[in-house]
Image (cartoon, rainbow, N blue to C red; front, side, top):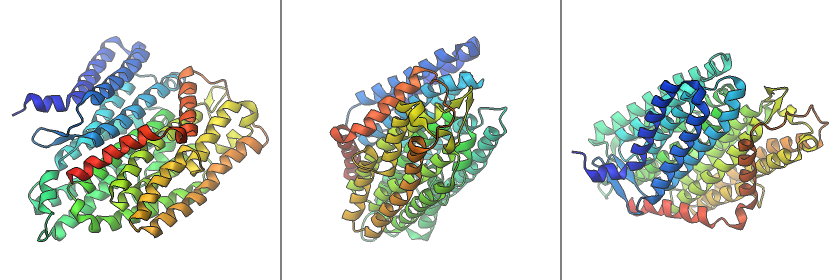
Amino acid sequence: MVTSADLYSVLPELILAVLAMALLMYGVFRGDKTVNTVSWLAVGALVLTAIIISASPDTEQSAFRGQLIVDQFATYMKWLVLIGSALAIIMSMNYNEREGIQRFEFPVLILFASLGMLLMVSANDLMSLYVGLELQSLSLYVIAAFRRDSTKSSEAGLKYFVLGALSSGMLLYGASMIYGFAGTTQFDQLATLFTGPNADPGVGVIVGLVFLMAGLAFKVSAVPFHMWTPDVYEGAPTPVTALFAVAPKIAAIALLVRTMVGPFGELFEQWQQIIIFISIASMLLGALAAIWQTNIKRLMAYSSIGHIGYALVGLAAGSEEGIRGIGVYMAIYLVMNIGTFCCILSMRRQGMMVEGISDLAGLARNQPMMAAAMAIFMFSMAGIPPLAGFFGKLYVFMAAVNEGLYVLAIIGVLTSVIGAFYYLRIIKIMYFDEPAEAFDKMAGREVGTIMGVSGLFTLLFFVFPTPIVSAASKAAAVLFSAG
């Protein structure tokens, strides 16, 4: 029986779903000449959803017999997802028009993907977890291959689809094993089962948990489930790559955190070692593999793998402080990546996109403002103080140190130092190499505005970090008061 309380709890998702379907119908009847209108309406739909989420009460609410949960952790992560999706749509408008792939379906697919992400963040049951994940994935498979006349884009979509289907199968297999041995799929009931001195999860549940974690690790592109990332990042249209780098990763990290800390919080010792392994492996691969890259989108793929490794340090700590660190880190990661992809979108010569790192040579002389923005993002990603990226790493590393994970924190710092090499190399190429041919004038004020605001946020985060840190603290506190 669906009650009005259930519907009120999922009001933002319902409104987003209705608006997405309405825009789909509008686009079908009006055709591709309405692409800009549909795109701006889609951004408006995401903004409206974010406002409704903010207006919901701070108290924890559950819907559909505990299938979905709405709390401050969900609110915080949903805001980040919606910001990432809205900015990706805005960044795509000029690009899609210039590349001849302007279709009204593009922003609508992002809306449906965002709806899936919101459901993932609120999932409180293995079934709702899977439904949200698949709704997100199905939309992303399509937009990865959105440039149909490009072999690389088609290959990116196919790789993502095949490997995504494999990971979904592993996740579903793990969920079915957990259900088979525990007798329930609800997070609250699972948490109760594993609490107490006589609680014995059994080998079946642990094996199921490993499969579940493998499926979720694929979605965040953590090593060893990262193999799709560089090819998909390089092959997909650049605004799609920007979306992939932020919103789905934030949603998947939120889902991973909620799943591990909530129902399986009492099995911390069993899953902590897996998280530590994939965190170290991701940090190492992200730091080392990016050194030899010549394509900036592939470099950003390995960079994102490394950043997920750093975020997982907070989860490995398993403390409220660690989850707060993840919240702060993902907010900073969102801004840094969006800003960097605005710079990449501006890399055009004679109307053609260029993606080589060597193409940035002498950018400081040709376009000093863009070079300054790119330098800010690169320094921040390298973790140089006092930029935002430094504080992101500081919060997760301090959480690890406070929980006695000294080796993990030291490896994190060392991989940051190694990773700084390829970030600083880009700055060296922009400021000290012989200038290459100048890029075209930046098309569209939207991309320049997003780049400028992201740069200011990254540069001045240390002046007033309180709003993000306090919001992340409240989000983390909810998980631990509940679990």
